[in-house]
Amino acid sequence: MLEKLFKLKENGTNVKTEVAAGITTFMTMAYILAVNPNILSDAGMDSTAVLLATCIASFVGTLCMAFMANLPFALSAGMGLNAYMAYTVCGNLGYPWQVALLAVFIEGIIFIILSLTKVREAIFDAIPLSLKRAISVGIGLFIAFIGLQNAGLAVASSTLVKLTDFRENFHTAGICALLALVGLLIMSVLYIKKVRGSILLGIFGTWLLGILCEVTGIYVPDAEAGAFSLIPSFHMTDFSKLGETFGQCFNVDFGAVGVFNFIVVIFAFLFVDLFDTLGTLIGVSTKAGLLDKEGKLPSIRPALMADAVATTAGAVLGTSTTTTFVESSAGIAAGGKTGLTALTTGILFLLSMFLAPVFISIPAFATAPALILVGFLMFSTISEINTEEKNYTTAIPAYLCIIAMPMFYSISEGISIGVISYVLINLICGKRKEIKPLMYILAVLFVLKYIFL
Image 1 (tube, one colour):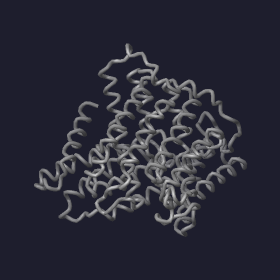
Image 2 (spheres, rainbow, N blue to C red):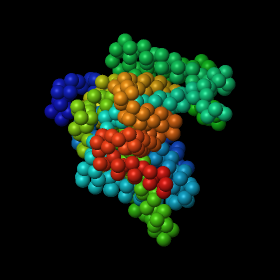
Image 3 (cartoon, rainbow, N blue to C red):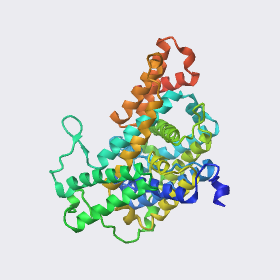
């Protein structure tokens, strides 16, 4: 049955590998179960309700990806978009969280329409292969930077960022950062030795080392310092809390909402989600070898539709925009090639509702090494970008795209800078034939975004 559904032999994989890859993807994404409720609770939402909504929306979206597109990509509440909702829409603009959820719902409906009309697919195909490869490299650096931050290795300073001082708060932040380095070493060696499930084993191994440190007193939990116990607690979640957010996107008083500002909010969600999703799909598809000779993803339309359906469902359930996660790369690096990987991840998200405290106990320093290692694996695509002088018109935009993602902490910013620079450089250098018509439209839209959004 699984063979018929996911064409395992045709894709050169098996059930054991796919399941292990799905578990790996979930483990690297599990942090969202702690982070998303924490962020959206700042908008006035109940954290338990957000947790349940996140689990169900992730399950629905990932299953859509599994059965509609047969791709090993997982979906959940997008980082950055949840912060935009909590701190900009509900914070700076002062809108109730119900209004923000309605904007996300409308955005999802627009995405469904765009996916049916091939607009999103056309955008994906219009981006030149050099930029697609650059996006993969840029995402690699971006998630590696996230990994360094989650590990506590990269911290804020007068120079914006620096290496942490391990001696400072050693029994909390210091030991966690050190454990992340040990975990990265373990994971790297296992991966080089071609041990199956090396990333997953590295996550569990690092977590176990952390528990041992807590038991022996090397790691000391301190809630005020953000250092919580690494030993999972066992209690059930209050499922009735979901009623506090379910369907609340339709409970909006439009008299208190400015129409123009509301439209701006919708398009802000739309723009960021569109290019974050496209960037993620391009990046992970490139690394997984799923793009054809022309740089196209054969299953792009159902993949985009799965993303749109997940966003719409998530808004109804009570969470911010649900999107394809770059952490899917971890599962792909572990051998995931089909929708069975996504199905496994989706099921784990659903099960996590029952044992949410256990999954939330997975510390960031244990999953951070996976992000850093996967960042390297995606970075390796840089060798496929032709940087010879005769190709500077494509190489320089690719370079700008790459450095923009980690520096500006945004996949969509990297894409926009890459697209704008590609069009301008090729146009000025007399290579108009290299520019597809849709690239002009994208460049103009990106410029307008910087002016008005």
